[in-house]
Image (tube, rainbow, N blue to C red; front, top):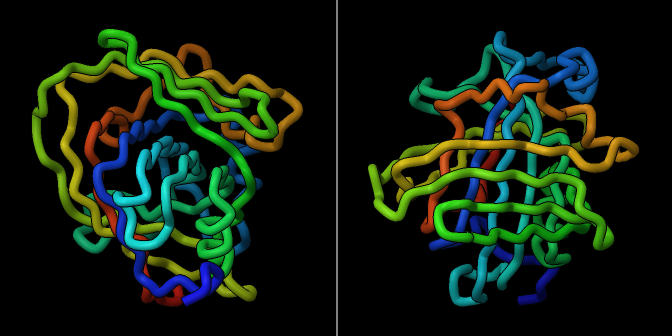
Length: 227
């Protein structure tokens, strides 16, 4: 089977993942990135996932890669259990053209980028770069214990051929304990992603902010029209 026609769904295991959420400095600028037909959640929250897949053996077909994606929480649409909002991708920076090809076919705005996760004692530093230039840097304090094993689904929305499409992404993740998000820095004022920057000080959405040294998930193979 050719790389451009990877079978759906695709599985990833044991990625190192930092998930963050905050209230943006400019909610109107963030909301302007949404297409017609959907609107921001009441708290205007931005979400961001930064993770690294270190080895090809951790995926069913993607190979090793790193990724940062982010966007807005949505009103009126949730995960299957109703426990979290559905989310819209506005930016998706992936180091692998194999993965970028796969997700572009499903409406994800994928572009090249690289993400690194560096742990210095308890301090985790995560950097997202485009063309070798850092554009986002996140810092957190993380413990070496697992507080809980989280499991369930996330729901993400994309736009495919003019249609809004939602997909469920099942996951299982070991959650590090303790955990504290220290800072989210948007380093490139001239990059479009700057519209999603947090206010100062950062207003963290704690229910959607965590670190997992081992997060496993599936990219959906069957999506559904949102309306």
